[in-house]
Picture 1 (spheres, rainbow, N blue to C red):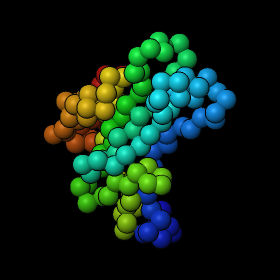
Picture 2 (picture 1 turned 60 degrees about the vertical axis):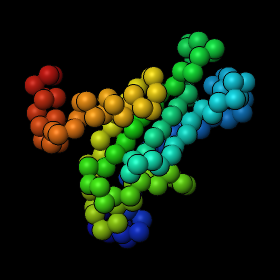
Picture 3 (picture 1 turned 135 degrees about the vertical axis):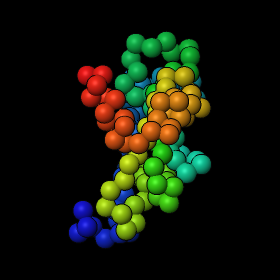
Length: 131
């Protein structure tokens, strides 16, 4: 809302953090992996999460990967400390999201294949038709 100062306006992604005693954290630690991470790259945010992964084989690199990009290239992605897009003077933003269980590169490819060149309104209409 406009009542929020521009320096505090942001859209954030949440990467769940575990505690040292839960199953996901112990499994990731034993494989020298993190249960979650966020990094800013190429104007977007790359997220990775191994939280709530009970039931997947422990000998592989299984995770949920997500790529988030703002439709407006002037919106800055910041991974530290909050994994957010800084909105500045804007009060809203369109954020595109691609996901993959394979890799962050595949999440970006999925986003590009499914969303590029189509407006938000076109995507809404397609979703409504599908449902």
